[in-house]
Length: 559
Image (cartoon, rainbow, N blue to C red; front, side, top):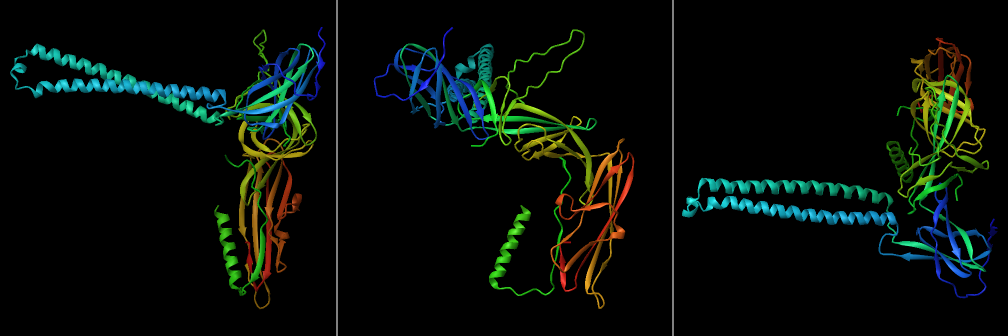
């Protein structure tokens, strides 16, 4: 059994002569993708004769960050890694092999197109010649020789011209069809080229100086960081209302445009950083104020400032394709049954605030800028299901599920697709979620809760001789019925205007408001909440009223 020696890293003491360069046939083994870059690990096997040599890693992407280069390795005997040099090699052709291949294909197709155009032109010339022959007898019809030609000769001549025109016409059409196919192929290749093109006509060359006392079978690892790669989290929330569970499915979409394909690599994702409404409307507080009925004089400069501010305000108001090969095999039971395939999940490792997800199996991510999706994991949990309605804004009830995230690593913010009992409801956005935090998800309108909102009006009185205040009253009634076959917790929200002026008073009309409300729930200013459990088919009415009073020398704003 051969003994493996770890490498001693050292710099060379003197610039002694080196042997011939050794070309490293390297391949990418592993990639760690960050939200805005990637760490790439290449490996290469090399047989080192005794002495000093230079191992050359050629054709590396020009975007490689030279200050991130790391070289390590091991072999069946001791050897020393010395200095590491980086060169940028400029070329006349594209540095990316696939880009050069596509450009060469486009050039060949354009040459083919010119040949076809020449053949079409030749056929058109033949047609023109035959057309001139067909007109020649008519032009010379007074000639005695032409008159002496027999009818059979005329028929033969016309038949020759007709057959020639037919043959040349068909040839033109065939060539035009070929030309169209070539044009379509060029267009497709140009589209592909736009996806992968880097525009670079240079590449990096890394030269690793090594020294061995005796021949060594070595394996080197070259690590470097590169921009042009990223990953974004993507989520699904799947609500099972019967089981009262929510499954959070986490995936990652990766795209890269680094100039090198990642084929059969160990892929790791790191969180570190070097249609109809799906949820009920959340209204802002209604602020009311009062100002003097007599406008105060303002200076010219203040007037211009106010005008600019008003104009600015007006302007503001107007304004799966999985590439992992995990080697899974489908198995079928011997007697008419089958097994569902399991979805591979990533191995998660990390701290409370960041971590890495190792994708199972090996992965393929071409350098074409396209998005490739990989499954990371599924987090099932129990959920509390309830409904919310804001009847003054939207006479609908929305289904809300509250759960506690039980994953080990935080979930980065990202888009989330919502599914209710297997049906797609819509899309939303998930803010960053840490382990053991509560998550509130809205799963669209609940058609089995009927909400009817009625505005009842209210009294309005103006200040007079006796009263010094104006008063405005607003009354409404909301009917809510649970049409589910099970009890449902339902919360009804109403808005209460909020005063920010001592001359304006806002009060709830107690005798016209249903008891049991909570003011400013969860510190949401200007809201009242009635929440309780509705039994199946139960219908309730919630009455609500408020009154706003303000000084008679003020003008009320906000309502």
